[in-house]
Length: 224
Image 1 (cartoon, rainbow, N blue to C red):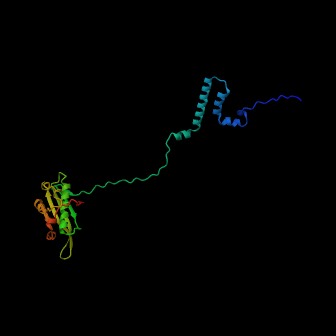
Image 2: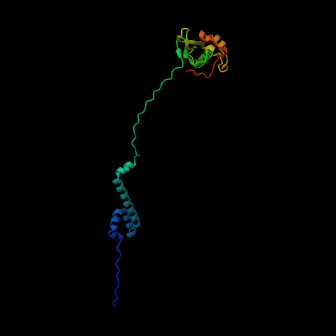
Image 3: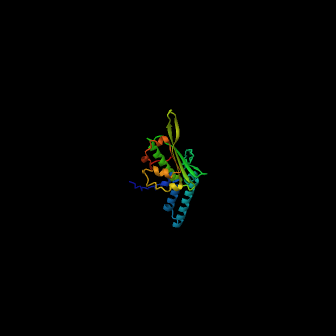
């Protein structure tokens, strides 16, 4: 029997195989770094410098190949927005509570009362409106008098209807300031008003059925 020495062929490196070459092409920078550190006998400092150079080339090449992506990343993403028409707000000045007559210094207010239960209720509401008017108007230093006219609907003996003044009250600033209206709430006030008003008028058709004890100032009345 002849002894034959078996000779083993050295295995082929993976990066020299047919399937290794595509991997190297795809992962070239990483392959070079691996190869430098694993397969060369270069000085350690040289390996470090070459590794840094390869890494920088890899980063720069990626940035230069993707300028649009870098540009997009540096700016906030904007989404299209629909244009909504903005309505202009028109500021309407509130209607003044009273009419100021500069020549006479009178703050005049005319109201219409149509929903009173009886004559006394109508006069009570007129008095309450008068007090509210004075409290507001006399805050203006130019106002010397307040004048309230209260109108309502009357029907004569022939059935004809007309809108006439039912109550008219006029008072000066000095006389108005005499009153502590808070203490006079819901208190009969007919006699005091008649004495201190410069003009005190109640329509005869209202006066004949008027209950004086029901004539008072109600703070709940809303002057409009």
